[in-house]
Image (cartoon, rainbow, N blue to C red; front, side, top):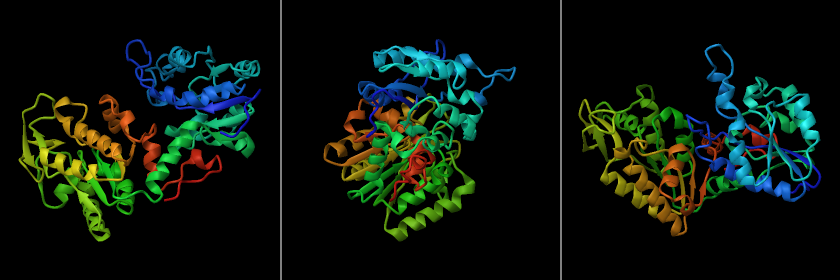
Length: 406
């Protein structure tokens, strides 16, 4: 950040969309808040003041029975206590996003002070990228800092449109967003080889563009999780009651053909941990992944697949991992994902660059205490996927940087 923040009010878009405890609505996981601390403290230490804005959840999709917003559940007031503790500075909370009250509070901010605006998604103009709403936000500050990588793929008012009201000298990325882009480039721009990508999760349709793009880039593509069974069935395999997208069978064959043509080693799990019900208490056994009996379903990768995947990962020089190898939230079907996490950490220790992006992959390395043993853990699953798919992120483009070229 090359702006001099002394005596300036900085409007900072952060990603404080954190999970809350269901009962008392206190912060359950403060990772995203912690990751924003370097940017906020830097501005304060330079003598600036900070106006923070963020969304929290999807309040417009979870309205109360009378059609009103559930303010109690989605207010950012719920994070003020944790934010204050982490910053060591009193956070002034404003229960509005724009208006006279907000403007007055912002105008009175002194050096070293912090205020937090209410959930940006309480305003209908946020998701529409509304210019009037964005201009009202911009009027609160002298400079704009975007540090919300997790929402950089959304063309919303507070992530994208607002940047139009600041000239180039008065807007910049925060440290978190800068780091996200820098680490993405290590995967997209001339990665060290062998380059191994691990993609898991339930559906091929969710990762279609990513898989297609990765085949153009990687040496080995490991496919696990529920999506693997669509590939199995496409090749004539018997998958029992395993998850499958029948309308994506042709696409799976096309991806397999493209991988062969490109000389990419596309690995599917040779064996699976199968169960007779989608339950942690189900009966289980091991089966070849393409010979699963009716009434049984694959819920994790088997021992042979674990060893094959891990051996390829341990020899890699660049690693990208998105998505679990099985039903990670059930302890009896989490072993494959955990083994992948350990293999990625081992490869990193040997000098590989490893980028982790996406819910359960991040959860796995965090739960196993391996987050500091991999190179970089991304805060933005959807944004990172779109970046690696070769898409332009609106929140990045609006700042004048453009997309990360591969």
